[in-house]
Amino acid sequence: MILSLSLIIFTVGFIWINSALPGSESGAISGMVRQFVEKFFVLIHFPEAAASFLLTNIRKVAHVTEYAVMGLELGFLWIGLRKGFQGFWNAFSTVLFIAVCDETIQLLALSRGPQITDVLLDAASGLTMILLIYLIGAIVGKKEKFFEG
Image (spheres, rainbow, N blue to C red):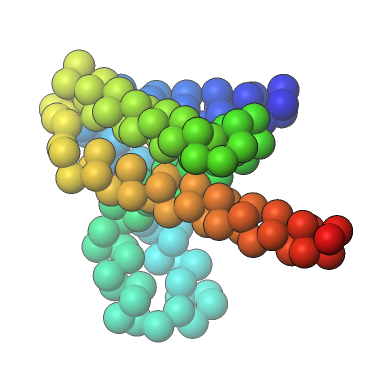
């Protein structure tokens, strides 16, 4: 549980620190990431149309990735602590809270602003991973009961 909480704190810190950066600095980091990913796509012969779409939307891809990781971390923590729907609900509520705080932090950053679409994208990413954990847990639990009885 200590490892799980440490990973969650690290991930939230990473997300919120990046949200507090001024727009110019955030844009420069996105540009460096874009260049790295572009070179990687060329190296692995990634399909050009898919690469173009992902590179054009690199900031949104970052949101999806960050909150997918967050959803996994919170899903494992909460669903492990609270069985059933309560664990699922706690995990999703926490992801949503972190996403709203993330966009609210951008109100304080120079040349940045919050976007409701980012909150929705973040919540959807986290929810997808939490649902995946919840469903896998339900399937495994049913199999264990089947083999026990």
